[in-house]
Length: 267
Image (cartoon, helix red, strand yellow):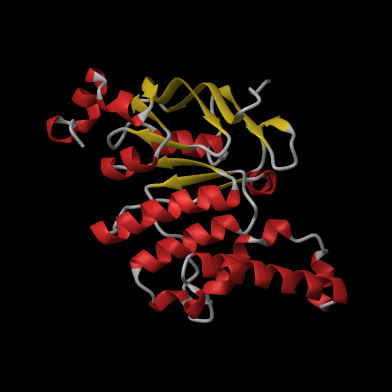
């Protein structure tokens, strides 16, 4: 169980089957510190299944998911409970926005901070001084993150009445409050228009730099992937197809034929 000094995550020989269908077949990848890494492929290629295996929403039948935690330890995530993964420094978003619409924008971020609280549930219920201090610190941290994303004016507004593009930003902001070393983004540009997607590109690169974290994303918008990723991996029917820089992936004949299509070759 090893990682190179510059790596934050390594997936080794990952496999998972659903009935007779092998959704991921002996798949491997490695992500470096502070890297934006893209995973591409058509619907049904196994991309989200890989994500779910990394975060232990699914338990793989075989393989390892080796992760460097924010505490500096190197651990195998396979077999760990889902809610403990966040504490180690790995967080994710979903294809469908998972926002609590009835509460404020700021409180949505605080939901994502639950794993960071050090005081006991009893201290929080009784509103003991230590719990109140910790809550003030978390609220300030949430407010600072919202300011970075240009959402300060909305922090007290219920999330339910906001636009889809803003909800995407809120979900991204919520991943940051736990101090992650790796953020997994599942189709972050889905449902966004061209202007919003361009803004998202700048936000992702800025957050990587500000928070010194690595980012793994699945995305169908090839212009977004090729524009912000340091490296890209293509997956085909659950199997590794190719990996390299965006330029190398664009010029890979197998990737052009299987995923990008003729009209995308010159993106």
